[in-house]
Image 1 (tube, rainbow, N blue to C red):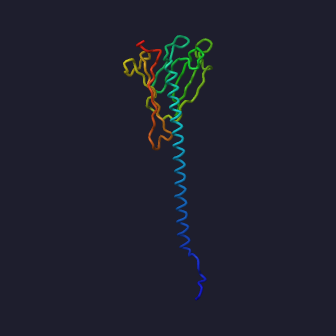
Image 2: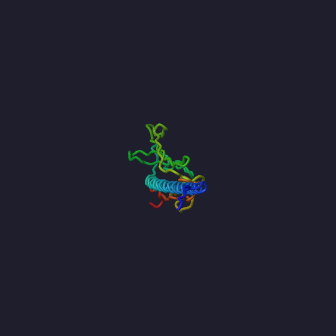
Image 3: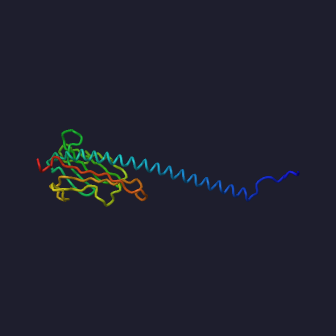
Length: 194
């Protein structure tokens, strides 16, 4: 028996094996990257929803106690679909602060302005905090205002209930769809049936 001294792989066999190996490596890498992106999105979306729920709870707790300003202004200072200004004692110092909820890009901001020495609510008494991230309301209303008969109203002195609806999406241009966090707030100090 004569031994075959030319045992080994041909160039074609090596090319086929290397191509299969590279294809498996690329597919495996894509699977890992996609899985990591999905996990990160799920985590970010979950955190954004938790923040939105906390924001809704804090807004509800605060706005229920709306009261006149230190200079006697009506409890509601301004109402728009994405901007709401009202007065109330949010820091429990027995003085009514001016509170402004507004959207800035994809953030929901809470701006609190103290009354100041002469009750003129100066900018020097202002503090701003972001209370919700990844807002995707765009042209949709965050705030809707209702009268005592639950009819939508634009008259400040008729408002008795406020609907707050936050639309959350970490990746608005990519599925999945938006997640909504919503509540209705009854203004206790403005009830007609007392």
